[in-house]
Length: 270
View 1 (cartoon, helix red, strand yellow):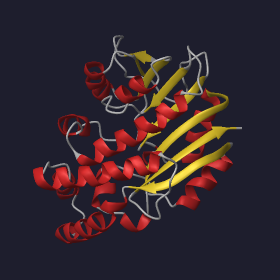
View 2 (tube, rainbow, N blue to C red):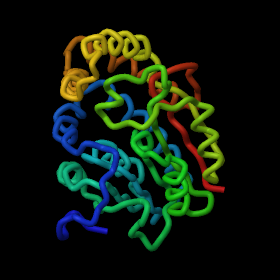
View 3 (cartoon, rainbow, N blue to C red):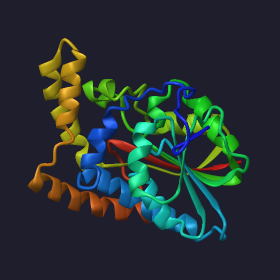
View 4 (cartoon, rainbow, N blue to C red):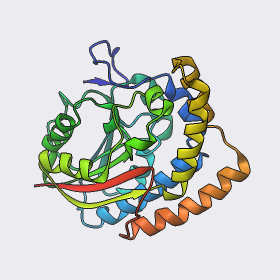
């Protein structure tokens, strides 16, 4: 373990992520419709789960990055202790500006915590890990019996594109694949649904068209195309933000969507 305020993190192994993305993410997360909609959904779900937890509960976000979601966990679990952990110091420096909770630079393969957690969240991180079943087992060991895992991942391998390659994804998931992996790792799935439904046709079309501009799969071009997806286009961003806000409220009330570009899962340790 290396705390954010501690010495350098040379002993932290390299993960499947490019830490240079943190600078770009930190500039757009507060405004971009995708992050705002996901955060709203996560906040609503966490507030519901918080009703069943007593004062002093322990919550961990693994792969907290810039603290974009972590600050919403703080708002949801006001009666507990929230901790953020990430491999990369580059992201934690932004998280320190956004949150007041404890931040730890560490690896879930050798977690630095002595006490288990009531809730563990991992949001759009699992797809970066080659051995996802092992990762879920590592999280399982950090949970109290009956503890809750909150998880989001990208959906549909058919949407695989330059974006996934540039982001160093290992896979995109189907509902059946994610459920099976969770079950094998020792979880009971309570809720699972696709979301970001309104973006599905837009993502499919734009990535197909943009991919034609990078048929040679040049990493530099892929990074440029990926950066372009984070641009804030005011009218489009406002419209999609409004639509996806409605979708987030619908899903947070326990409803499921038939398709989407992401999957949300709520699972419990047996």
